[in-house]
Length: 537
Image (cartoon, rainbow, N blue to C red; front, side, top):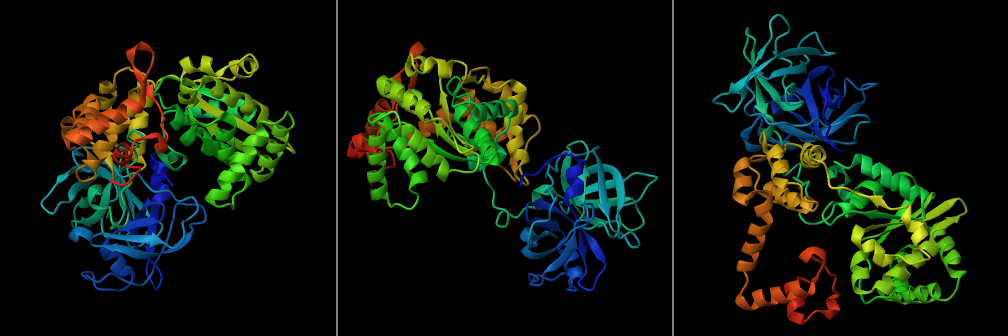
């Protein structure tokens, strides 16, 4: 479950903590799908334990979600207690509450003058009372001061554990922990101090140089319209090529965008990546045999894959029979096979790549109400090498072109993954700086993702900072710095092996550039295999 923005999320995250004997004690809020944050002293009061108890309570806490329809009840167990000496308790729900959503935690520094709102449960207001005011600055205890507006309710006893919503940042800036008696001044604990990484393990929302996968769908942003377009095309066409320049995010769009949506449409998914040296029928058979024969061991699977490859080469009726078998094993609406980057295959073996496309076209179709579809990614300049007279008509009207991200979409691709991680945020102005530094090159996405990944590893108290970005050398320098440092750390012998390995993994492309060339591990010398991490060192 991803965190969200907007005051509706504040309402969907709100929790009331109940005493074991009944009655509302104080507040809390959801910071992850199953984690509630509140004050440790609130839990102590609910369980009738001493407020200064250092021992973690072992009894469950009763709570509900008062602003959700039906006010669903829940029970939760303490999983983090006063970490870092702060008055914070994190509780894990026994089961997620329907409709509940974790709130976005935003930066609690530099908030002077921001307006806030907060709901608490003072005596006589078990259904809640809202207060609003202005945030000030931090003070000696590490708390941030806040002043309630006049006239209006004050933040007083009964507000402990309540999330403080910063209207300027559109998120939770901290948790109410104390209030001055007879005054309009209260205090919050900044959001950076709320998340215990042992309880809510940090997950990097960026992928470095790797493409996004289905497991990363919650972090994939900026391509909503393209994702919907490709998803609709795959449902309606036998073969859908997704074409765009290298580095524009084709594989990520299909894997993290279109494929999860197609699964939601009732289709199953498998994937293949053609490797030079393997004939077309074997490429397809190896990808499909796991679906057709899921219980086979590795050796038997290879044998069966070879048998299937032979069948695919024998006659015109075989594809129909294989399609029926695939759809009988697939999901209710059908099956999608994703062919990733066939241009590498076409560059090494153009005739085999053309045969691959012919076989895919022959296999595509319907049976008993389900459909078999294929989606492939490729650079536009590689499409000519894939086409033949028999397949050009099928492909020409089906190509879905993918342009580089516009700056506003790139900024969303940068910021939205951070919004999805509890207690992680950018120093103000850094996302805009990253977008500006990325320039207008079509292949900028891998460089941006790599820089963001390195920034995450260098985060400071949950913040991605300008200082760390400068240290990396920005978007352009991050990868160069990392590569130079890694290569310099090798011995002279291994540096020479690295150069030999790089030569084998690249081939010349148009415009004086290079493109990737996949190599089978069995074709690498032992010392290169060891350097690549695929063999013993």
